[in-house]
Amino acid sequence: MAAGLSGDTIYGPDHYRCCGVAFLTISIETVAETASTNADLKALALTGSAPEGYWLRAMQQTGGVGRRGRKWESPQGNLYCSTVIDIRPADPAPSSLSFVAGMAVYQAIRYFLPDVPMLLKWPNDILVSDAKICGILLERVKDQAVVGIGVNVAIAPEVAGRSVTSLAAAGAAIDAAGLLDMLSREFESCVNLWRKAGLAHILAKWQSLAHPVGTVVTTSDDGGEKITGEFAGLDADGALRLRKTDGTLIDIRAGDIFIE
Image 1 (cartoon, rainbow, N blue to C red):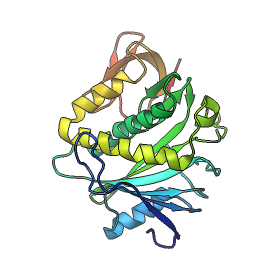
Image 2: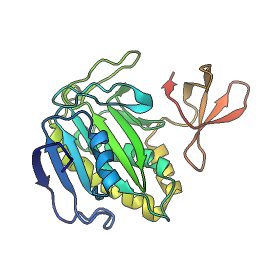
Image 3: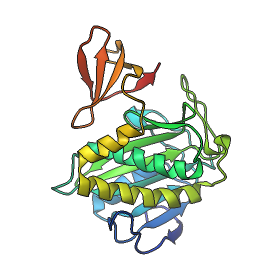
């Protein structure tokens, strides 16, 4: 239990068997409110008391943070949760867990929205009918990665310059607790695949669910200059390859992209 928090601990099945065994136990702790589930798990990770398979879910957050320090709006009814992954010597690069998390969220949502258009958008967005539905944040603490996930389940808070949606708006009859039950199992499966099959397999599977090669996208360089080109796939470590209008190929390793 996170220090300074109180809540019920809900234990799922002791042993999920998804593509083999990844975690000994999946446990989900739900609290009514906290500032940030990622901050709480980072504090636990510093003390060495955050085991793989443990999830912290808050019904509401007062200080949620998204990628690049953006504020993450956290009204009650949506899913706000974090988990931890041990960084083992033989594992792929920890940063590639963004692809693992994106695939797990995609597959969990797809279970409840089997017929709605969906795609993954680099680096770790999930779009439902071309609208953003999820946010993922990775942070490292010692030899663990803290993975924070927020999904619009009941409400789609406005985001400047973005089209957003929720599971409810897309027609899914599921609440945040039910989504996390599915997500925790999908995440275990994807982590196990990441460890056993390797990053190349994960990237190939990710790309099969993402915007196709040739999609026109716009991103920004480190100086803020916008660059438009065609998505040319991923390199071996997951960087986005962008073919500029003059034919030059460049690798994008950080930032946001916008599909034209």
